[in-house]
Length: 285
Image 1 (cartoon, rainbow, N blue to C red):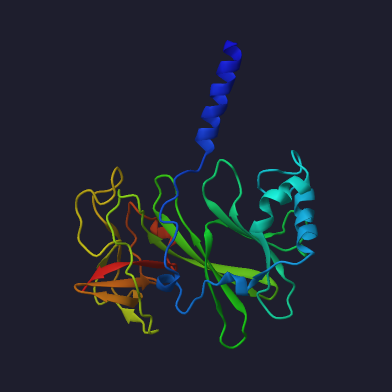
Image 2 (cartoon, rainbow, N blue to C red; image 1 turned 180 degrees about the vertical axis):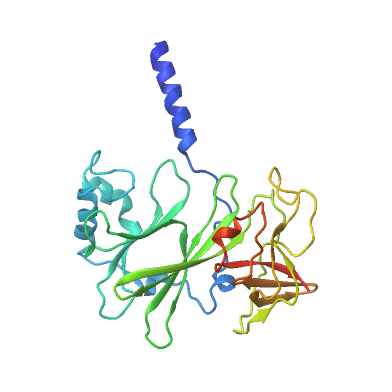
């Protein structure tokens, strides 16, 4: 009996070690991060009678990192659980629709995922995009009418990092870029992290001096992020850095920076990964 108890406890320890739990700030207003975006996804996602057979190909060749794999379950069992999370998306008129999965995929992972597959790609290379997160919004290109899809990657556990992915289909391949902000909504991190509304007029500004970027509109020097950092400073940006002002709030601007990050240590990000990546935050006027 002791052997079984030890084994059972070991399994629990292994499961808890690999569990991804307590996602934070999961739902954000798409109007803040996607200028002119929409979130009525029923207008761009669709299902038909061929959907199951196409997903079955991925299941049969064990190309899905989901529960109920071909090694343990039949496709009928898999489909009964995951059918509602699959759909087609056609980014460009005349292009072959791609397979899109959105939602929870593993029992030990409380985070959602967005995954896009193409059956026209080579076996084991059919996953074109796969990230933690949920569908945030979409836009249509004003000249080509193609779909531009936005995905919100949110954190879990003790992380506070968010990414907004922008996905387009160009020359039969998916291309994506991302922007970054930080925040948590369980009370251990001072906010607000973004305003209720923004106004993107398309104008760019350039810093006249080295400037602090903070994650909330205040200078916080104590208990900004419990058990992590006392200050709400994200990092500095250098003179000449390019940015947009998205919201005017008293003594503060909510902005997005595009370049000019300072090469310095930060508790919130590694500057080497943000040379030309958009970063949202607040700067003092």
